[in-house]
Length: 102
Image 1 (cartoon, rainbow, N blue to C red):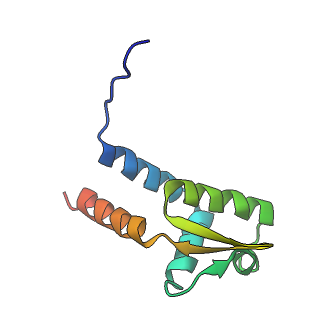
Image 2 (cartoon, rainbow, N blue to C red):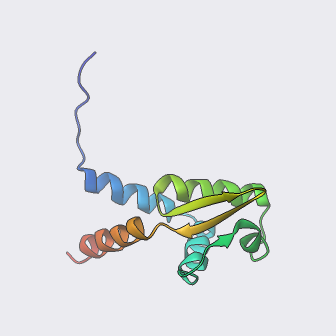
């Protein structure tokens, strides 16, 4: 098996991952909702009351944001509460600021 040639830098791949997470208005809403509550976490049920989508759809969007590393979840059965992943949030802000400052 041949070694895979890497065409993109780690930063380019991270920006793309963060960008994909931001590519849906529901996910932007979720991040905005959580960012406005930075000092506390929010249950998915709280967000479900604010959005005109099914809970299963909300769950898929939350999974995508977790996969990108922008949020983190804590399980308190039967509930899951979500928070901004502050470290990655700051990294994404810095990366996008640098990317768009050129």
